[in-house]
Amino acid sequence: MKLPYSSFSILVATTLATVLGFSEILFSNSLRLRLPQGNALTFPPSGNRGAPASTTGGGTRGGEEHACAAQDGTKTPLVALMPNRENTSQTATAIPTLYWYVPETKAVKGEFVITDAQNQEVYYTSFALPGQSGIVKLSIPPQAALKVGQTYSWAFMIVCEPNRRNWDKYVRGTIEYIQLDPQQKKTLNSVKGLEKAKLTAQANLWAETLNEIAQLRNSYPKEWTEFLKSVGLDSLVEKPFIDCCKPE
Image: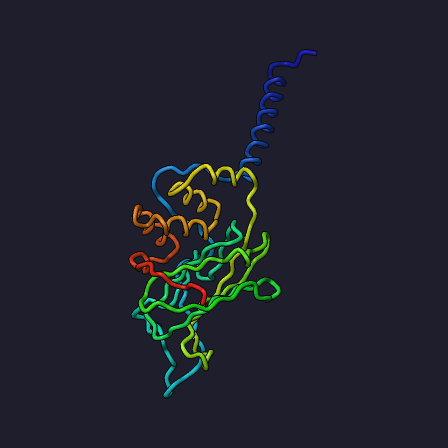
């Protein structure tokens, strides 16, 4: 039986809506990435913005808190380059690179440790601290590769006094290793440089975005500035990168 025009129109409209809706679901849940337009590079909201103050123990010397690094509010303290004050982030790589700003310090030794959800140590390293302030980076080595679907805790420490570990300056945070679907991986592998940084930002992959734009900061200083400002890390825009954190 031939359908009336109105019924046929409704059928076509419904079918198209279903197909388009299914395609939208596929795009939303599988791809979720659009090639970026323009030059802006910002990171999506992922918590409270702005750098938290670093933490110190409660040790005292001469009635005053022992300090081997900036903490008086006039200088930038030890800070993790993270997208929120909680220092939480996501990555889609098993061996991410993390960044911190280290102030000028009298300490000569630093430590980094990462633990799993059961508080079992996954990786630990100690290293010589630089003799100047600046941004440093540290990569998780292949032998300590993260496992997909798990969230890990990390701590970066300035050892002020080896025999007084409660005097340490430190920052803590967490990183979740998520798995991308094949289409997302294909999309990310199809671009590089600034475009890739924009796509990883869309996917909320902080470690990848920061690592990408950090390598491009000299070529794209405006993007570097906009990126850090978008997460409240304005004070670090002009800080130099320094060589550090080679395992002892």
